[in-house]
Image (tube, rainbow, N blue to C red; front, side):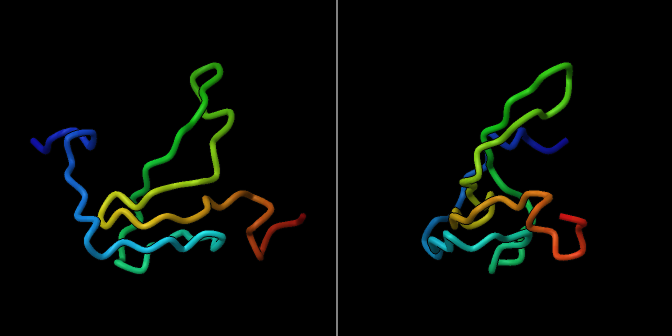
Length: 73
């Protein structure tokens, strides 16, 4: 069994600040991010846009539906 992510130790020796870039995948290849979210009725109802890569600690901006190039916005 793997340990909870809160005990995951991030190696920040190669981290970058990519903000204001909106990323889905970090430059290190990871797709796992730390975000601050808000819940309502058991669903994510909001989130802060700043996020941190779980693998390397790089910072970026979280994508939103309006950022989707194939969206209808």
